Image (cartoon, rainbow, N blue to C red; front, side, top):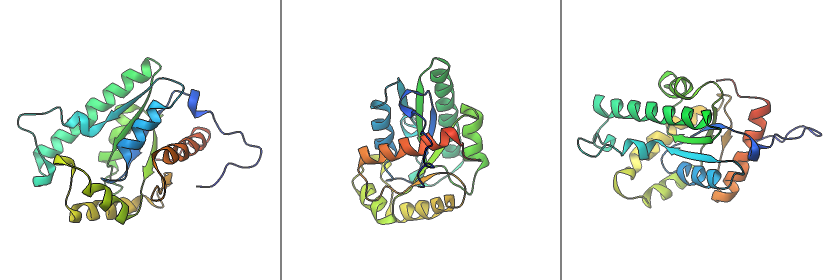
Length: 199
């Protein structure tokens, strides 16, 4: 990511109420980074995990691992609306929020457009995209329905590469631990506050 111009003071993201959407494939570290970032800000910040909300459904759970269908699509849609409602509620009460989701660049109306409708135009999207070997390794350490096949991880990662050239900020955290990635996220958001990405 380019540095701010000399003499340009970066915005203070630690004291600003923000709504952030952290985008990335399974195994990118979205949840870990979002939790850490939310916990270490000076202002109250909520982490809203799409997967956590989706998993509120216990009986009749639509598991995308067994094949994407109308039921799993509807479940994700409902979870996104629920997360959006929660985010607007937090923001209305002066609490920042960070959401995480695997939004695909080839479905912008469903992904980014939906989040903008649910949360509002001030939402700041950032893509977290480490290398394929990293996401495969991290995915292998997952358990339960959050662990995907290697083939599915590779397919999702390939689709996520479409964010390059989109104008959205992209963080390659292949060589960064969670605290270092959170610091880079702060830098990226400081620039996005002063010059919001077009999306």
